[in-house]
Length: 121
Image 1: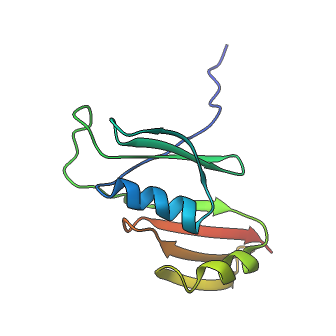
Image 2: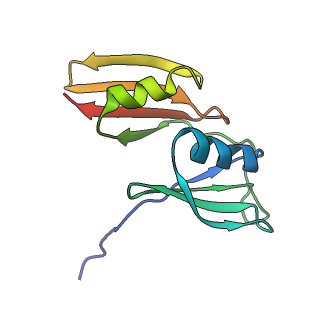
């Protein structure tokens, strides 16, 4: 029997834990499903998408908080979402249509992580 991967739940490391939770809940519309004040860890979800945010702990040996890529969200009604976000957060690139058949834009979260949003044209 072959192992089956069922989901991926990225953990975003942050030194600004409460601010990060507020960004994802207050601006992007995620909800808190679990929160542990002692561990400084929280699980957030929206429409079946789940991410976790955490202050690094002793089990994680990191030199610098960051990510060398971006998080890409496939969404619907991208123009409406763009209109609700564009004046509230730092823009990486504005909404546009791309030759690969996607309408996209990208923003930075409060930690500098790049969040891309796309919808098939």
